[in-house]
Image (cartoon, rainbow, N blue to C red; front, side):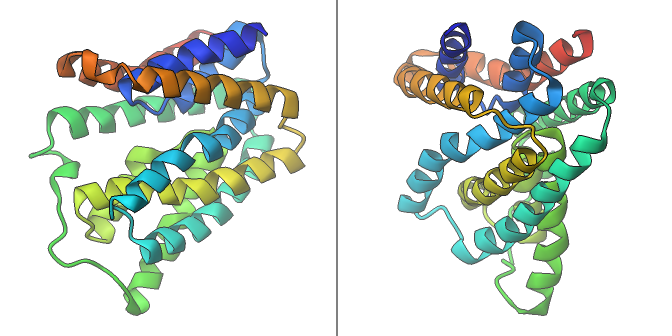
Length: 252
C-alpha cells in the first residue's frame, strides 16, 4: 500500500509538470523500497505501455503522428528493447545503477537544450524534406529504431529525447509531429522490453499493477492542475527530474 501511495504522489507530480519520470520511478523503487535494480527497470519500462498510451491516442487525434515512420521505428525499437533487456540481465546491479544514472543525466542535458535553447541546440532542426519511403527510409529506420530501443530496454527509461532527435534529424519530421510519433514509438518498445524483462524473471506483476495504478491515477489528477503552475517552474522541474533520479541512484 505504501508503494501505491508513493507512486500516486509521484504520478501527481509528473502529471502536473508533464514530465516523463521513468528514471525517477526506478530511483524511488530501488532507494525507498529496496527493489532490486533489474526488477525496477523491468517494472518501469513495462508501466510505460499504459502511461504513454493515452498520450499516443491524443496525438493521433490531433494529426501529430506519422503512422509509417512510427511503426517502422517502433518495430525495430521493440527488437532493440527486447535485446536490451537481455543485456541488462548480464550487467551487475552495482554497475547498472551507474549506467542508468548516467543515461538520466544525458536525458536531462537533452531536455535542457530542448526547453531553454530550442533555436540553437539539436532540437532546432525542423526537416525541410521528410523521409517517407524508399530504401533510405528502411536503412535509417532499422538501425535507428534498434539503437533507441536497445537504450530503453537496457536502462529501463523511455529514451524520449533520443527518439525525438532521431525523428527530427534523420526523418525530417516537424517538431510537433516528432513529439507525437515518439509516443507511438515508445509503445512497442515498452511492450517488448517488458516481455524481455519478464522472461529474465525481472518483472513482478503485483509490483507492476501497483506502479501502473499509482502513476496513472496520480498523473490524471495532477494534469488537471497544470495550468495553475507558472511556465518557468514547469521548465525547471521537467529539466531536473531526470537529474534527481540519477542522483538518487548514484547515492543509493
